Amino acid sequence: MSSGSPHAPTGKALFLLLLALGVPSSGARAQETPSEAVQAARARVDSLLPILERLRERRDSAREAERARLLAESQFPLDTFSVGPLRVVSRPERRELATGVFREAWEGWAPFAAGSESALRSTLFAFRYSSERSSFLERERHLRWVSVGRGSRREAIVHAAWLKVGQALLGGLGEDIREWAGGQPVVSPDRLPWIAREVVSAPSQAARRCYRGDLAWCWEALGLADTIGAWERWYAPDERRLFLEKSGPRGGADGHRALWAGCVEQGRDDACGLLLEGMAPVIPLSGEARASFLLHVLRRGGEGALARLEAAPDGTLRERLLRASGEHPDTLMASWRREVLRAKPDAWAGLGWSPVLALVWVLVFAALATRSTRCRLG
Amino acid sequence: MTIFRQLLFLHWKGVRFGLLPLALGAFGLPLLAVQGVLPGGEIERTSTVQAAYLFHSLQLWLPLFPLLATLTGATLALSAWNWDHRGDHVYALSLPLRRWEYVLMKMGAGILLLLIPFLAFWLGGVLATSSLEIPEGLRAYPTAVALRFLLASLVIFAILFAMGAGTLRTAVWVLVTILAVAVLGSSVPEFLRGTLFPGMPPFDLLEWVLQAALGWPGPFEVMTGSWMLVDV
Image (cartoon, rainbow over all chains, first blue to last red; front, side, top):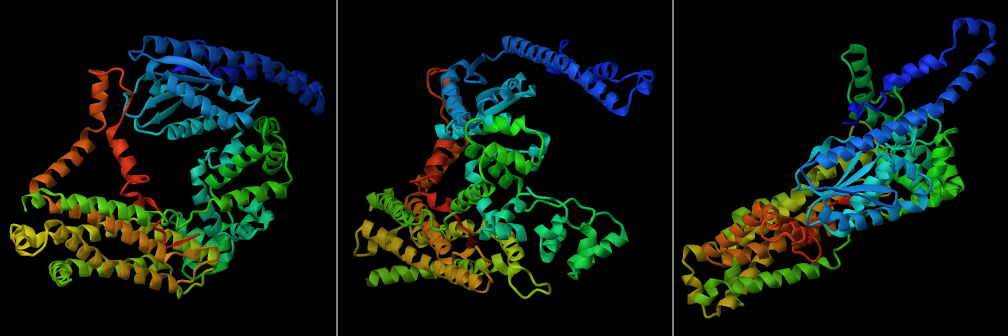
């Protein structure tokens, strides 16, 4: 929608602008030493940044104008309002509910998101009930829907809003962090029991050592360590075999199939090793587990943690996370491990009261059975 | 007591061919759920790989546990009134009992018969988990899952038993009401809000009923707990 706006600069236009201003002429290049050329190129690129920022601002305001025009022309009456740094759109009759819900959702993020509100600038949150008709807003790229059932409890609505706000906030993090967190850097706390199951049952010696309490291996299991030799460090031979068994033989080459059969069916480690040689190591714990660690880092880091994470693009991911948390590696990892393992599900949960409850229901239905029409006829 | 024994015998006679396969299924299901992870394969597995196989296998079979509990409760409840319906409920009138005593005795007999598949399920669970090498960090919960099986089948039994105790007209009314809520529960409140009562707060009857039935203290709350035979 907004990409069609006449005021919005396209990626191609920006590229051409950079090319025209940033590439030095060949004549000038011949007279400069390499380091001077680099310095000059850097200075030119730096001089372009304010232009780029101005263009971005123009693009955002163009998008905003387009959005406002569409809202005004919409056949559905909609209300746009601000809740803290969030901009929310809903039907006018839901404004009060949406305001309360998004205020609570923002309070969940505010403690460690202070200073990073700009990530929310181009996002519009739309609140609606899932049974309501869709509108033109469906096509809006920067819109995040909080769509809930009509009978949903308030806590469930707040939770849905909390997730969307988190996705918008953390969506602005670097590509490497988002990729590391499995593309979805926000995980719901009610997934923690499943993450606990994963820490216990992931087919990886790194995860197993983490479960046993060796904190250095937790960093490995989360993929926050050197990836050189990672297949061997993270996975024991039969774990590597399981991985290859699950992924199946790739391609139709006979040699590859023979290697795969040798690895999976005959249990030959050398065949497994050859197959894994060209493959990037797969991090033992899932994106969900990694996202839970990211959230834990931000919580531990407290005020400004997100801004610290964003402000330090240099260094390894581990170093950046540590900087954001402001804690010692062992303290940070021990607290995450404790939190996850504490959330492990209790198989007996509810069974204390369930027999009583079942008995009550049995008595209720027994009473109904004795009061049936046939009884009264009898 | 003699009458109760006779009623129990009658129920058993009427349901045995339906109940025995269910009891066998209850015994076999936990064993089937772990069959792929029993030790003895050609390639030895470490405990992490064993845990991964175990979780994968259990999650595949998991939905069948509450389904079997539902089938068991339904079979026993619907068979309880078979003979009465066939004889137009005359037999009950011939007994020296008040109707409510008769109903409760019938229900008691059904609950007693319910213990057969429960015990089969528990034994199957104990046997299945004891034949496993449980990986480090995991624990077997055959008793907890069997207890859940018993409670789930008990609640289903009680609901359908109460429905069966009524006339056909009552059963039809109940079923039609359930269907109506399922089909119209979302759209009718919305229609009313849009036409007659614009000030009415948003409400979804179907979602409300589902939440009330599945959450505490709803009758199906027991179904929503963990059915994992082996868990952390």
